[in-house]
Length: 384
Image 1: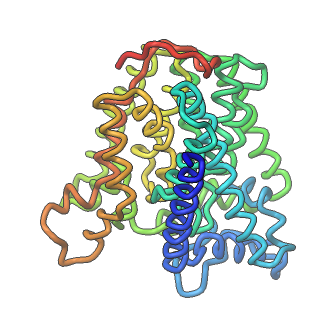
Image 2: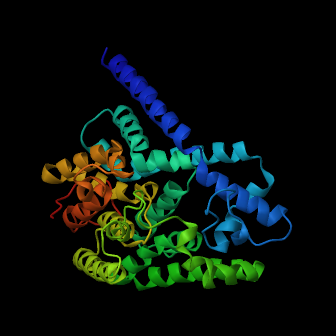
């Protein structure tokens, strides 16, 4: 009887999750996949123009990643669009399931819960999380990059493998923001892993430059500085510290205030992770939060990098668990979108920046301790 109830619960939650994702897909229409697909088709099968020349018709949006990312996406030039979308969706589901297993698996196995049941619910909860479903329905690569970095951190860095840092380096060469994890390796004095990650990023970047010299020159000296290609900084979906400031009446001093915020945030993060260098899972969690805060543009779908911190807080219990639950529910509710268009309701500074406020809270209160994350099966004391 208990098993039947569990199966029924999973089926109902699956239907609800699918319904939520379908609604989001109708709204987002795999927009980013269409941008990638159009740019790659133009680049490899067009009239010889550069990938950064192409913009999706009627929009200012074009390819914003380094040339190495275009090389990785080369199969798009020879596949119809819908198989590309199907592969992207499957990739999001599989990488989300892997992340849940790696990060929440020890808690699920250690609490005496029915493993398949608790794991199924955890995966469905993760898929319903707004950044994940936005990654799914925009056709983005966020969970794939997070999975690459998490694998490197958990099974490379934590185990002091000779290959530690390769995943971080390759992820950085695809999309620059994972480079914040190289800072983590430097702050925690993992010199070999840091050198490996820098070498992997440099090797991938130089490979792309050798094959596509014009595109590499265009990206590094022009397209990289053109923020209009990714959208306006003040748009509500930009839930970084820069986005928060761009929505305030600070036009004359916004850049200077942002630089001060970057320095303070970076210094606080470095102080926390340097005190607990052996807690690699905690380092993964806090550095993911840091990346969301510091990047000039952190769209809501980029906030999948908050998942390790949410799981760590939930696992710890007490006030941290309450923080994780509140963050998940308010983020997933789409409450922040009430403040998208003017005239905006009152309390915009709070409701329109929900991800920013919770990211700061996670940076401050995510538990960070002394456990070696290379042995994720151990249950040990974690201090805040």
